[in-house]
Image (cartoon, helix red, strand yellow):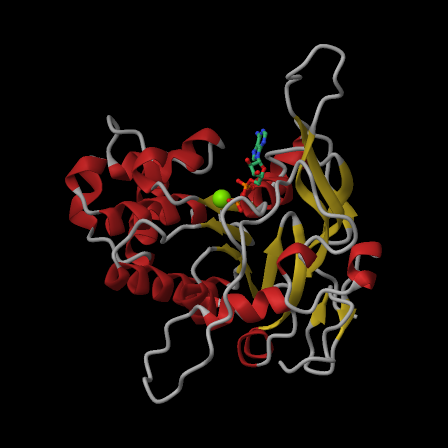
Length: 326
Ligand code: ADP
Ligand code: MG
């Protein structure tokens, strides 16, 4: 068995809401509510789901930017180090995050070159000439012209800003990159360029990605495996092609049916989901998807389904998956 770079073991993150009434119990919002999976070296796990389903919270938990309410994150099979310790800092250096808002992640008053090289300054790695050389190498790796090193963030395009952020994230040679909606605010053509850059960098540098997105087309392009989240849980996870060609969970099936197909001769029936997702403060009994599910039965209201393996290689949290058409 090859060891996972990172594993999540029954992770939860529950937020206590402020009291609204005297003597009332405080409501608990279950942002992440029992998530387990493994991330293997070199793979790209796409994490998809509607806004508010817990994707960003999961990303923060994995990187130690937030503490789980229960459960654990293992790195190379070991418990993550105590926050603030030297071992913890080393682990954090190995795992970097790229967010949606590249401009917001940059300091408007510092040059691009300075910001790409900032981690080397902070960790006092090498002398100034060697740092400058490393910045040049990184700019080359993310296909930024060396001539713009002295410019400022507002002087370059959104796509270039995201390249700067990626260069800065990679300059310390991390092993894992968590991308949280990293291309969501870019034009479609620029999105494709950044995705292709990420794929090239992954091959060149042996990187592992967790790629969070609400956009199924983007996830399909970059992922080797895909996890579908609904209300703080993974409801389906498996190899990319299994998830996209034979989705097993009724929620995944609905998401897939909503992807516009570029080939007009192939027409999939659109499955409409009724209503909005329930509040993560007040989850339905049993299966959390049952209130919107076409196949729900009494069993679904009574029992919370665990992930179970399916013949197509995926795992699905649904009592009835396999007994209705994929
Ligand atoms: P996503 O990234 O999938 O849109 P998030 O992880 O940002 O979802 O949020 C999941 C749920 O947790 C949402 O209901 C959100 O309002 C809630 N949430 C996120 N962060 C906090 C926080 N710091 N305090 C309270 N609730 C939060
Ligand atoms: Mg988010």
